Length: 162
Image (cartoon, rainbow, N blue to C red; front, side, top):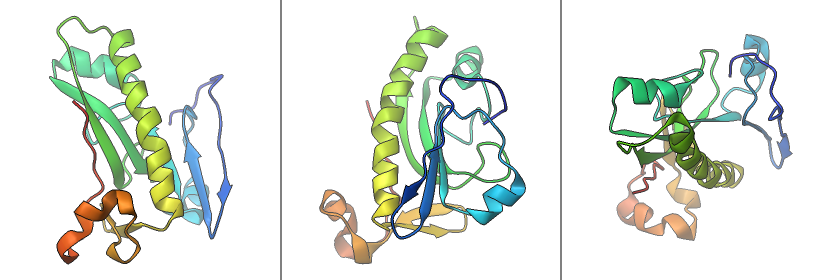
């Protein structure tokens, strides 16, 4: 969320029981006052498996470092760039012939899958934040997550993709 001009600039505010502000392609650092006012109610999607490669050019840096897996992360916004509690992640294998463009395209597909799911979990009040961890609330378990809720154990709502 670094400041720069972008046609993807958007900030959507959803009003249900409380405000959730998802941001995608926003590329701006929000003021500490704004982040504090909406603490753990602003979401961002990032094209890497945080905490690896925060900030800009994550896909390029992943390729330069020779990592074998990258991915997408939906997280709550904190005052530090890409440092908030992680809500969902999906991995994307890096292929030997990948370019920044091909890797970015596959990661974007995962971002489009994860982001609506994270927003749904949030708006249905199924997320519980414990320090840096985000876990599913068992008392509000959606049928999609029933298997994770069995046995009375809270589960981190992470996802993966092959």
